[in-house]
Length: 144
Image 1 (cartoon, rainbow, N blue to C red):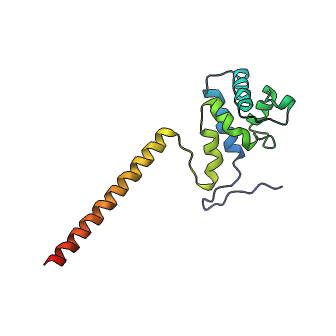
Image 2: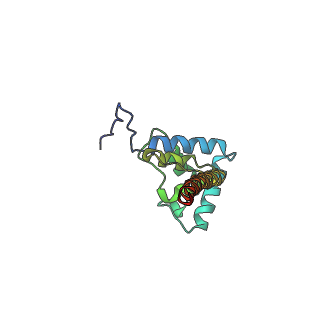
Image 3: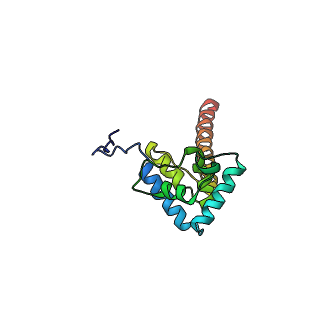
C-alpha cells in the first residue's frame, strides 16, 4: 500500500505510526527504567489485565519492544490493546496523544481534566449570570 502524502494546505496524515513510535521512544528513554525493567513492568500490567501478545508465551520480549520502538520499521507496531499498558508502564500519555493527534483529539491527564472541568463550570456560571441580568432587565420592563 502506498503511503499518502500530507496535503500542502495543512491536512494532517491519518497515519499515526511514525509519531507514535517517536513518542514511545521518548517515553521509554524518560521513564527511568532500563529496557528489561520496562519489559517486566509492561508484562506485569498485561498479565494483570488478562491480555496476551502473539509472541512467546503471550509476553512482550525485549526484542518485541525493540521492534515496536524501531522508527524505521513501520510494519511492527504495538497492538492498540497493549498501548495503554505501555503508557502506564512508561508513565507517559505521549504515545496515546500521538495516536489521537491525526483526528485533532487530545489526550489529557487528571490534572488537566480537573482544570477543564473548572473552566467549563466558570463558563456555565458566566452564562447563568448573563441570563440572570437579561431576565432582571425583562422584569424591570414588565414592572414599569
